[in-house]
Length: 386
Image (cartoon, rainbow, N blue to C red; front, side, top):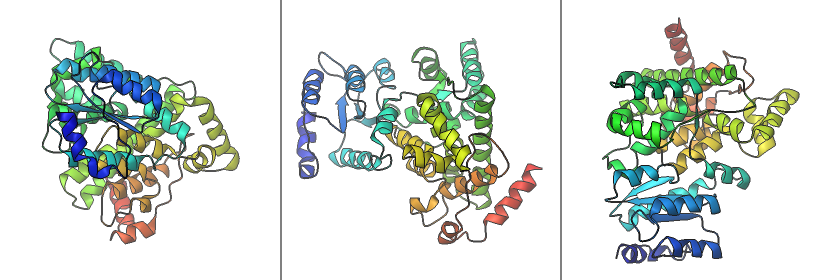
């Protein structure tokens, strides 16, 4: 009945989309064997094969397919099993307009990452790799009889990978929250210790970072840089008297803005090594070298993944355009502007192998009414940094 209802509600889209409706997992896989599909939306409870099992199989067979779950009254254990193979969760009952809106946004993401090889690689990712020290400290704390929630909050909030995964989960339909959550601290409190234990100790949602390309010191430097940018982005939003969601979004986007570098370094180490070598040889910033060598950038890679995961749009936008903010088409101050200027500010203070050269886009700042604010922000950041 639900399937028939969705089929009727999506009939107006049949001239734009080719849609196939399957009564179960095996039927869906048979259809996917006949032709490729951009998106699969599955219920969780089905006879023979549940939604988590289906998506695990789709992930193996068709990594380019975006995977969505319809979440209704499924038990907690089944939902947690679907955290990794699912990109997004949708509440059930689901109105046709809500599903249509989700699908339209998902199709728009395809334009963000034009390189099909990289798009396939990113689509396969379950997790971002967490820093080893942070991961170990978190697992040790969660194994204690009486864990300190404040310490857990601090550990997750300082690690880009754990922050991204926590936000993916807490914004899913499983929690049925009335508003979008943009900050890790709020997300940790909503999840609670029992769910966090399950995710970290049994669901393997967080994994340790491993890469032959980067030394432990370089990984730590990247983490320190991201945390510095996130703090500065939040301060800039505060200087502009932005509301709390904007300040929180600026902090989270700043923490996640360079996550694409970790993705590329850990999954495409050989190609990324060539990018780093070309950067030095051609005397370019890393962003420009990526664009020339890979046909896309770390900003696009991370934004594509976060978009697949259903993270808040303001965060995805700020990550995607932190080097080229004019691409966001923003008309007022937002996390895009805060992260753009904070990134440029800290790029000028460091000399790292994975450093970018981010010139501030003065025309963009003028267009959002902040033409003469950059120097004010820099002076305030300098003053608070002393």
